[in-house]
Each structure stands twice: as structure tokens, then as C-alpha cells.
Length: 130
Image (cartoon, rainbow, N blue to C red; front, side, top):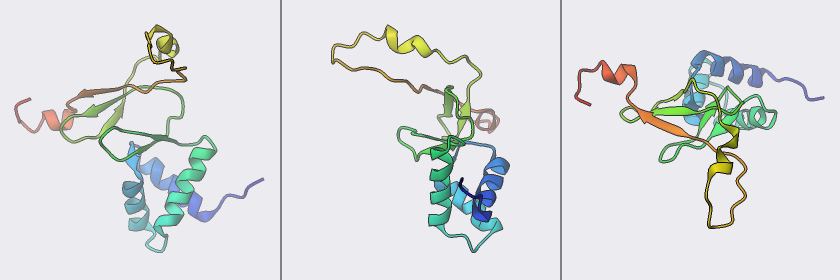
């Protein structure tokens, strides 16, 4: 049995406060703001620990830094094409989608991530033309 550490509690508390799809650097900055003595490596190590334990999921975002997701079940996302923020999409996951792919390359599909694009409400309210 692994023991819970103070640093691990601090990282999880910050993750819950952020409540978004934050990058490791954003999480580190938020942790450092509240606890300046915690090192970058401690934060990164604990993020990996949470991922290994299934309490956090690292999501690869094409063209951007990876983000950490507190929802560990399969689901879809939307990325704002203006600010780049990532949001969850309220849509049922389609587990059989891989079976519909016509693949001439011989892949065995094991899953999928779909990221829709759009403009978030904050960016829409900035009165800039779409």
C-alpha cells in the first residue's frame, strides 16, 4: 500500500480548484502560487502518479501541450480555435466507431480521441468577427 503524501494532496487540491484541462506548466504555476517550496519535478512526478493510478488522464492535444483531464472515462472534447482552451463535450462516447473505419494499412484500432473545434463563449463575447 502506498502512502499519500502532502505534496500529492496539494497537487490534487490545485487540480480540483482549476477544474479544467490544464497543462503541466499551468498546474505547476498554480501549485507554486500557493506553495512556493514545491519543485517542478515533484508536481510532474505526482501528475504521472495520478495518471498511473487512473485518477487523472493525460490527453495529447495536436499542436499544443498535453493537458490533464480529471474525467478518466472515454469522452470527447472541443478546442476553442481562438484561445486554445479545451472543454468536455456532452455526447455519448461511440465505442464501435473504430469498426466503421476502412483501413487499407492493416491497423488494429484500440481506441480514439475526437477533438471538435469551435469558438468558446468567452471568445464570442469579445465582439470580434468569427
